[in-house]
Length: 292
Image 1 (cartoon, one colour):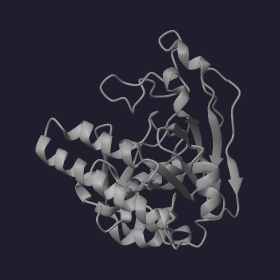
Image 2 (cartoon, helix red, strand yellow):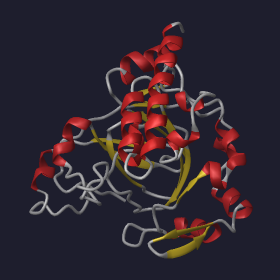
Image 3 (cartoon, one colour):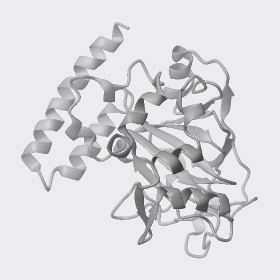
């Protein structure tokens, strides 16, 4: 299956590394706001051999997800993946919060990859209430032709995507191209353009000015991309993908501001207290990380 975005512009690519130290990751990619693909970082994970379509169909056949008003059990979704086509794709996004649905599987993604000196989500002083609007560990099941809506991630999180089974093509747009992507008025992290392969250029004329970063993520590879990178995906076949949110000193203040922006009207006192606590905690973690 081959699809091209509506404007067919030249595309940029992402660096791929077999071995990349944490220092190199931070200096060359995090600080510069660039995505990177690690080709072998996740290969030691138990998940890479264990999480097959048959595994989920057998062990979690009863798990159910509603997509576009249709309730679909895991066993049926796995069958649909293998019959999915570009013209008639399997329901998508078919995704789950692992900590709610598959908590016992989170350990299969160890050792956890870190996109900074530390992952602040894991800090023992981090209140769960601050990260309630994001899914730290997420699983996606899709098939040929499945497209994810164009967006960037909640709470300005950095994102890790590891391809467990199959392949998935990523189309990414850096933050400085946001003006071409028509953010929703009521949700500025989501684009009015839901499918970049069928864009109405009369309605969204600026889209033709954007230049995407396009990469096929192969089985076993991990893609890191920084906060505010817009992205969507397209699958050429059956796919199981693990996604994880990351929080460090480089997106900490954006994360806190977004939390407070969302909750200040509904829970003004609680959100103000948590925001203030987060500022103090961030300073403390800055000091600790400076000594590392």
